[in-house]
Image (cartoon, one colour):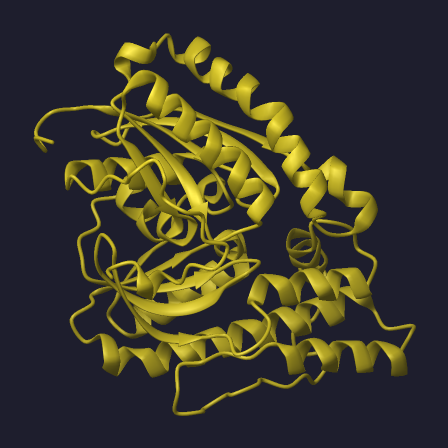
Length: 340
């Protein structure tokens, strides 16, 4: 498609517990970005229940698609491609969103773009800023913690990853131990604001290790053991100390990555945990110290949303990188495998 021509892509995100629809154009205008959050459905279980998530996607997606057109005044004649998350994620949710997108693409004779959810996060800063490749990227979410070099659309070099828990998963599990509620990450961050980050000694797994890999399982276990030994602990202090340990690990890994990403002048943080203000501030300071530009999406575009999926659709449609309707779903789909 001619890169000088503006066009619109409809995006659908249903990989976990956010049901989302968006319409984004090639000039980076977000015409619609609608999200139905399933927090009410999953809160009683203190975590995401896959079957409930799939049912909610099935119930709410048609309404959100209609609302996107109603709110924008756009019609099907204004849509030039349909993008949907095809992995990684919960298989049931992926099936709902991708099947709906494929059906609409066939009915309207529109290009279909199968989107890797992680690439949605990875390219969001290019939607919200004039970011050029390559850039160093810290991807921190509920299911992933990775350091990569983004070299182009579909071209990502993995430098390091979590060997066990993702950082967002660790936040959620700590919140569950402390009975703070769901979703856990924001609850821990909120409590940490009232605590002393140096009050409780906690480990920093893999600190100063020569690799760029992460590990958070031991930190999570240390929190549990401390809680068992000190049931009357001041919860804000424990949250703040845990959060500071996470920050120290992230900064140490980013420092390890610098020699491997010499061509990168920008450090980007993406994913749901990128909405954590303390982590953002620490990474901003890190960039200032190492002569890097810091880039993070607006808070609203850090957590799962369909605008990022539609934007990947825009980037790929520009390149003519569309997919067959029979493109399979991939519950596990590493970013580094995209190029092949």
